[in-house]
Length: 153
Image (cartoon, rainbow, N blue to C red):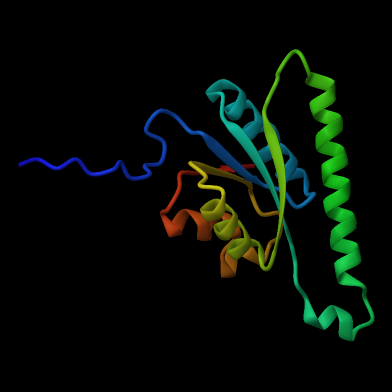
């Protein structure tokens, strides 16, 4: 007797439904967002724009209001994304959402990709020289092997 099992979630079977792009305000993250936006438009997928707010306990010890600064970064990113979406509205309509997670960039993006059931992850190449030694977020995401990862220079 052949019992039918309920279908399990399978990533990317009919094209991506959710494309996640990590943004931190760097030039490479804006290029990644533009690239991911094009992918989302062509695939009729949701573009999930994710900003991971760093959590730095040391920042409060130094008298730096870290949460306020990262909230301002998130608000600035949202404003820039909305402005870009308005400029291309009617020409390139892309469904998008903005999400903020807290933590280190790698774990924040992993959590976001899992929570949002992302089919693909797009990130900008690291602009920090030290990442050649200890590894960048992009390299760690690729090595995790859980999603197709596109790294935009």
